[in-house]
Image (cartoon, rainbow, N blue to C red):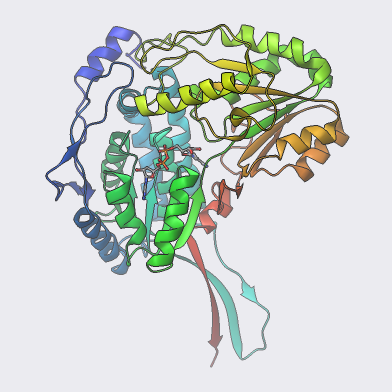
Length: 499
Ligand code: NAD
């Protein structure tokens, strides 16, 4: 049973934490080749957490060489499937055993609440369990041929995969990359965000403890413009899997084009809609809980945050009243207090970005519908803006903070037009019980992940099997499920002359 139950317990545990602060290369922590350091800051307190070597292209070279050696000698790639499965399952076990520590690292660095961080652990271990079980379930097929030849397809690993992750769900993002990349038999060099890198470093260490051979999973913390660019341009990295902003994603396209043309998987930004029909009135209460969750989880710092609410005009007032009332329960507070319902914005820089959108909202004539909350350091309460037109900045651009824009529609066609009026296409939720409307939305909405209504515990109902592929400025390439595993494989066609 978990003995950490009070704020004081968590504070004591945070105080005693051993924080990983060095690159993890070839199965151990090593000093960075660079003398300079960077310092992650706890946004809830403004305190420096540790100093981490800033990382350099030399660190990346060493990590890639270690991943290459591991790949070529087959220590992991050629391991029997059951061995791979055991190791990945053991990583999942270790994530759970060290859950409090991993959750704390994410809380300290990016300001989520301890209760959210602990709830998120199930996703991280879940990815490893799902892909552990997938190891012996992905195989090629035999093609029709005459009797002299055997023709078949093989799924092979891609080789050395580089991965670059954002700060919003540090451990989940590292796990979502590492689990399928490793399950497919690749070697990995991962650069976490400089805002929150320590849980990823610890994850790599736990992976070796679980039996993953040294050199297969390397982590180089550091800045995007040094470590990130060095991975993106590296001539010996076969594929790059990136999650982050659209702006950085486009840089990576350039790096690939200017280096070895490495394969890319890009999961980028979003401005996702939730379309609400008036026929949902009888389900108001349960729906509002979900709408708030989808808009404000992780302080709205969620790529799939449904940050545009597009509601049928006749239902607007009732729905908005309920949303505003329910959001009052989200009160920013001490992130180590298990009773806190709303954490901090991850950095002062991100806070400034959110503030600039709030200013733009007022300038362009949007109206604040929620109570005017105080903005204090990295803390702010959720905000709901009405009178938003589709051309306003807060309706078009990704804010990545707890700001919900409310728009209205008269006809369902108009709702779908507004929902699609964005260059992004990451996710969408449609709230209706009208089957004709629901099917039209499934067919016509440009979104990689589409929900027709949604329920708490999102994902529990479909496990880890759903795959998604974004549209437009939200990127390309499939993540999740078995298709997500195929993303990290190469398909080889074999013509084998018999006799
Ligand atoms: P970001 O693009 O600033 O940084 C992401 C990562 O890229 C970090 O590790 C960063 O150091 C690195 N990076 C930055 N500049 C780089 C460069 N020039 N070359 C190589 N690497 C570089 O994004 P962020 O602020 O960390 O995260 C927020 C963004 O991530 C939002 O746009 C959000 O929508 C997106 N995101 C998308 C998903 C998804 O699944 N689609 C999930 C989470 C977050």
